[in-house]
Amino acid sequence: MKHIHTIIAIAFCLFFFTAAKVPGSGGWVSIFDGKSLKGWKVGKNASTFSVDSGCIIVHGPTAHLYYDGEVNGHTFKDFEFKADVMTLPGSNSGIYFHTKYQEGGWPDYGYEVQVNNSHGDDIRTGSLYDIVDVKEVYVKDRVWFTEYIKVQGKRVIVKVNDTVVVDYTEPENPLRHPEDHLSRVISQGTFAIQGHDPNSIVYFKNIQVKF
Image (cartoon, rainbow, N blue to C red):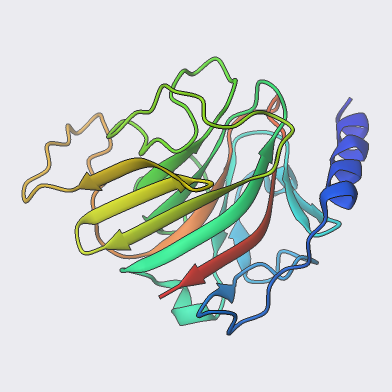
């Protein structure tokens, strides 16, 4: 079954392929070369992530792919981030920022920006997960969209295409319960892409950052 889904994934990426943008284009720097996972690191369930036709294909058991490359020493505080994303029906993923590498499990550090247009979890694309939860669906499955994240000081802005869906300023003493994302706070760190579950298939390309 996974072999069939992989063929579908390659077809989608070939059909919608856009070459990764080069560093220096309006200040944006590519952190994914469109050809390999060079500069990225994953621990358990590494097979969840593969690359074909300019896309990172996310499909497999729960895993997280962390940016570990040379750009800014893979450590970012204030930044702008954007990626082109496409989901298949019923899929769930996410983009973490201000996080750090773990061998397995859900990342303990950083915020998660949701990728989910039709999964059973009703927290939808663009949400600052469990902090500012968006229930409206702004984009459809099987359609490429751009997810944009900006952090400036304590302020986080998330856009889906050109629509601002989250504009959140972290308070001085944010309430975080120990069982509920104690370290989900503004700090600094890297980015990570989430492989949520074996039934989810999500594609990422043109992953760029400005800092």
